[in-house]
Structures are given as structure tokens and as C-alpha cells.
Length: 291
Image (cartoon, rainbow, N blue to C red; front, side, top):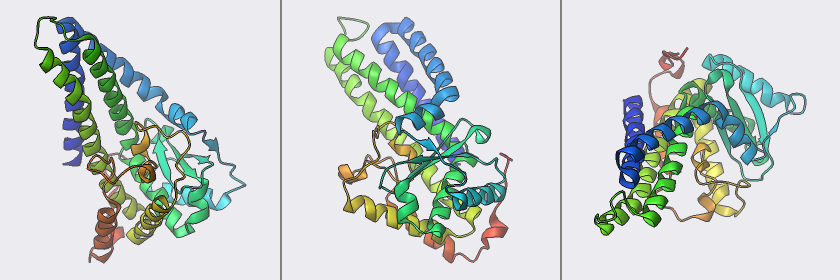
């Protein structure tokens, strides 16, 4: 059901993009917008991982410097039946992490120095397992394409706002209204995709690690840290903030309906319910069609 919902929402984003192209340039604009979407998604598919890592100045982690982290990642990769992802470090005191890469073979996980310093190794295990789940579910590609389309919709909306629609005699009010509402609609769709993917990554990550309480404890600690400090991930861009396990911009913004992440309290409650379930985690874990 989650995959059907994600596919539907991404199709909706593409439709918004093509519709704005029609508003600006008629049929020719619609075709051009569709071709632009194809080109942007192609570039996102092949180069998104390195682009995101460069934005956050992530550096490859020395295997000998953090041998325990490497061992942990190797063990979780075996449990998830995944190739071992590359590891990167972001020098920032805020505990956080994200996964990127177009597929499991070309995946990478970036963690902050704060994550290693502020969380226990058991909690780090929960976070890494969550990111492994994103890789396993191929969310890294989905979220990159979503961010690309959402950003492009905002760009086209600005063009419609300043240059008007395809017909200069058309209703200017309608043109302006569409130009204003399209980015909002794109943001809502992006939010819906991100939230559903986070819940699923929490669930699958708990099955990989074998203990939902590890992730629940980590989420609580990361959330509390973000509320107590104004430190945010360096050069955080709103279009990529949804990739982190908890939005790094949260400390700078009001708790709002438009958050790309579910409320941490809701995520923790679901994890607690999962831990209290009578179903054995090892028995319920299925490798699934991605293996």
C-alpha cells in the first residue's frame, strides 16, 4: 500500500510540473516541462548521492579510526541482506544521519560527529538500521526525485508569477493563484511521501536491528537535542532536509503542519507498540522482493 501511495503521489508531482508548463507555454510548454522532468530525474538518478554529500561537506570515514562503527554497519548489512554502504562523517554537534544513493549497490550513509558523541552504541545501531531500511526500500532514490520535482515546480511557479500565462488575455488572477498554490501543493505532496517513508523505515529498521527500543531511544535523544540547541547541520537546504532521520532545521522553525517528518512522539509510540507486540521480530522479518 505504501508503494502504491508513493507512486501515486510522485505521479501527482509530475502532473503539477507538466500542468505549470502548460500554463506558461501552452502545449509546447507542457511538452518542454515533461522533457525537463525526464532530464532532471536522469541527473538526479546518476549524481544525487555525490551532490548531497558535497553539500554537507561529508568526508569518508577512516575504517581504522571508527572500527566499531564499521563492524556495526557490516553486521547490519548482513542482517538486511544488503551490500555494505560507504560511510561518511559530517562535522557537526547535532546528532543526525541520512542515507543516499540510487540503489543498494551505490549507497552511502552519512552520520554527524554529534550522533557518535551524544548517542550510545545501541542507539547508533538503531539509527544505522533505520538508514539501512531506507536503502533497502530504495527510498533514497524516491526522495531525491521528489525533491528535484518539488524544486522544479517552485521554479516554474515563479516564472508563471512574473511572466504570466500562455494567453496574455487570460484571467490574471487565475494565473497568479495557480502560481502561488502549485508550490504549496508540491510541498504537501513531498511531505506526504516523506512521512510515509519514515514510518516504514522505522518499522523495517527495527526488524533489521532486532530491537525497536534502540531506535525509539535514539529518536527521543536526537529530538531533545534539537530542541535545546540552535546548532543545525551546516549548509542545510530545505529541499534535502527531509533526508535526515530528524529534520535538522527543526530547531529553527515552528512545529508546523508542513513538516516533512512525522512527529517524533508518534514515531516513538509506534516503535513502543512494536516492541510490546507478541510477534517475534526475527520471525516477522521478511527479506522481500528487493533481495
